[in-house]
Figure 1 (cartoon, rainbow, N blue to C red):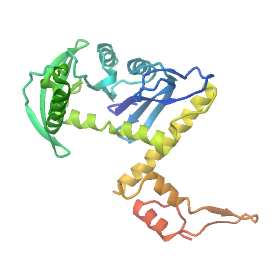
Figure 2: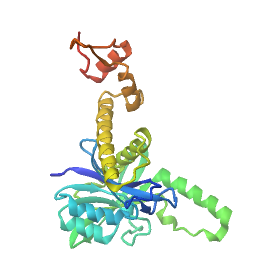
Figure 3: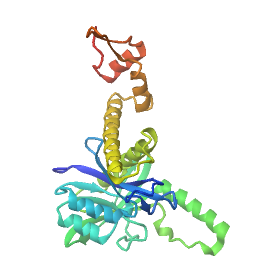
Figure 4: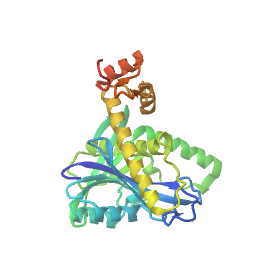
Length: 307
């Protein structure tokens, strides 16, 4: 976590029905289930495309509180943190500035920091979508920061259409400020262009990929353990598994094979080759299918001996 490295930070949870876990408590979750849960924080490296921290915590701990504990525990000097809307607070931004960290923080649409009257000053494209960008300088913790206000033209059209449908269905009960339609506001103390900040914020999709891989492909979406130390060990093994998963995924990306094969499929194909050990001490590999050999060549891996 040294130097100008970029990290994505987010919080998620898994459910537990154990009555013996102090970590398992009622708390907020996106599924709105009133069940005991264990929260965990994930820190993801933008440069290395791998998780660098996975930490369990009580289920009642909310986003902002978890971030403050994380900031006190880890060295963040000169690092860049990309956060989610749930972490927005004046105290969080002041703390990040005071400890020398840089941040990219999206704002909630009702934030008082947002000036929806800003006129677009620049235009760029993101994945074939036209984006308008305006900016305004602010003071955060006595230091300069920039408010970037983006308008996704296609998103504005989609939200406007949905708003009209809601008004037709519910009449005057729906009152939404149309100025905020299609708008995304991001606060940052980085001396970057609006386009660079937007692209970096969009890269935090890697965190969602990590949560999805952990809960679905690695099946670490629940625990049947009965004490807190066992749960911490469970998350440590989950972290190692997730780290290896992304190292394999990076190999697939480097070979431009995303869409052709998944991490799970690759490991399954490799599992058809195994090592045979004889009592005499002799060792040999089982027969290597031609598909596996071609995969190794395409991925640039030298795992199988020539003989």
